[in-house]
Image 1 (cartoon, rainbow, N blue to C red):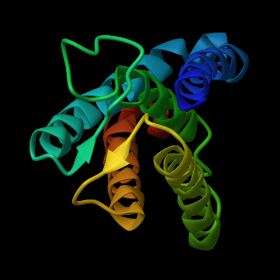
Image 2: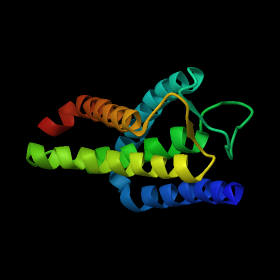
Image 3: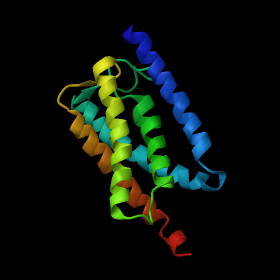
Amino acid sequence: MKNKLDRNIELSAWGITAILLLIFVPKKRIREAQIAFLFKHLITWLFGLLVVEKKLIIYPKRLFFSKSIKSSFTFEYFVYPALCTLFNLYYPEKRPAFIKMLYYFFHTSVIAGFELFAVKYTNLIKYKKWTWYWSFITVWLTYYLSHLYHKWFYRNKESE
């Protein structure tokens, strides 16, 4: 049962994420989306390799590149960067700090919640020396770094 569920979840993640990108990335902001995606990709690659190589997390079942890399290609290299792209494109820059904090909390909670589900009910991810709150903190931190980079990269655009 778990193998079929694992496969369905991973394939669904690809489909849903691709559809979200197609729907929510406006044509005029594709370059901006690419910058956000690639920067998050860089951060995720570094953190993901570190966590997997230190055996804090293992990914027993992987649909893609299971013999090449130990991390989850689907989630580390496509889903998280894509979700972070949407996070950056729709960040409530001109809203109060409380709203911004809720925005971070919502995005981070969705990812950490999905990961908790995957840990408990699938073979997609297993915690060895890791807990949900480390995932929550690292996702929040990487989103924050990505947002700082996004603001820095487009700093002149805001002043125009």
